[in-house]
Length: 116
Image (tube, rainbow, N blue to C red; front, side, top):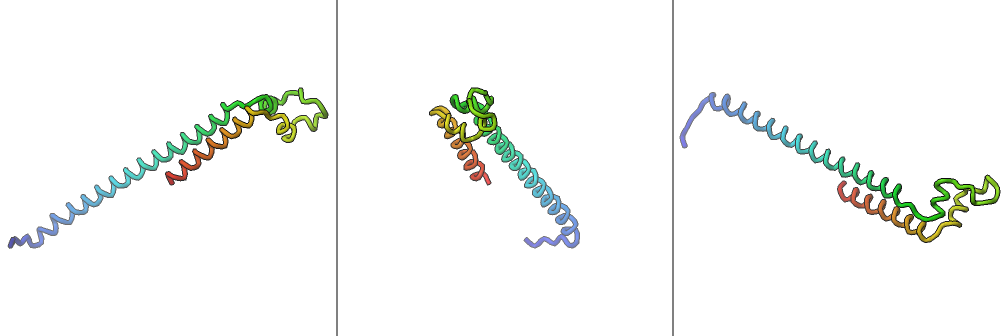
């Protein structure tokens, strides 16, 4: 090409190049924070989903009595609310609700791990 800019070329090129580098770095930083915010929102949504499923899967009579601590168990007061008594009184709805809660937590943890 045969052009010779002399020292003026450096004075024009250096500020332009540094401006473009800073602009590119700033855009990358903004994309990083957008991605991090979206992943955090996904994790919050997964946590809320897990909590809601755990709360709204009612189960059967055994879990209802355990949750509200009804005094219809009979026996001594110290034995009335033990986990063993709860397990003895669990029915099929309690088992299905328990399996549903466990599976929901498993799927949410698997999805969260896949995003990491």
